[in-house]
Image 1 (cartoon, rainbow, N blue to C red):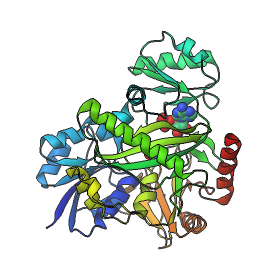
Image 2 (spheres, rainbow, N blue to C red):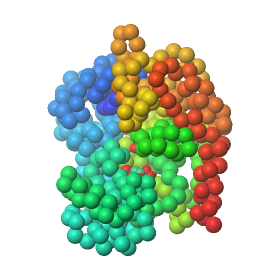
Image 3 (cartoon, protein in one colour):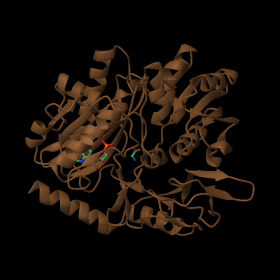
Length: 437
Ligand code: AMP
Ligand code: GLY
């Protein structure tokens, strides 16, 4: 029996999801709803439709017209709009949380308060403010602070003292401007340590961690330059990271299990899909930076490249509430993902420039992100363009594959050559050793 599946999203993450679906032992037909034509996803799809993620009616119509059995939702935007609720109203269930559960990503204040109410460890000192009253006093109690608008900001609204804001008057001015456009502002203690992503699969009851991944947010080598959506990421063959202990992973998973339970207690609904914990290991153990209600981009490319279990079986088990019945396994290999981005990214990227990927060696996996496939060539549209992934027995080899492949991309692009290298990883280890001393 053919399984008909709706995929929502058009980034490299969804390209990797489409590939994971097509790798299934089941015969599948993929119907993709995208904001822009991603040629990698289109290639795997029986049919695709281009439209807005706010147009829930169009997504539902497309799903119904193609009689899909279930949906896989990649990005946060349609989750925030309530696409899972809209599909469920028509009897189509999804790998992805409903709108109220997606709040773990869409409202940082909600997540912090939920964890506090249910006594879940991992919160830094924090307070949520809806007016300016008390902000100055609270800032005075913190050694270092971070200010976050309460709502989706595309990773760009978070201000970290020392990196973006220095003085208290600057912080107050920023809070004031945030409160004009957002219902609340979250202020929290600045944590120091190494960040990692623990993407957990869940049906709302069972929570399974995928291998931890480290992303690189800064645009340039040596963690310099502006923040981006993520320039690349790596994972290790032992399913740890060089600066992490097994205990760190256990703690991250325990926090996520507790949050899944709290969400159910609070809403009476089961969270289905990915709870991506953005964690930081500090001298006082693991703390939560934020949750995302979806796979990470680029981190999806790391873990889906390693996934041995049939992804369609995982989706069905999650939707049916039977995740405890299957064994989710990952290859004991290392992965390195590097993104080629247009020159000038993220602030002033060149747009509508040709990018040529024809010389990338077969050894690497290639995923399309912000590109448009026109008749004559592939064009970059301004955001991260092409992701390449090396998978190998060791991190060294995986990095070599990614590096020699990304070099072959022709066009006005740049990338980080330090991701996954010994030099950068030693720096991370030294940083953690210094903190733990
Ligand atoms: P978020 O959108 O919450 O992931 O924040 C973006 C980035 O800001 C994170 O990846 C961290 O590097 C940084 N950040 C957020 N919260 C904190 C915190 N409490 N302490 C230190 N850095 C933080
Ligand atoms: N890589 C960060 C994110 O997907 O949000």
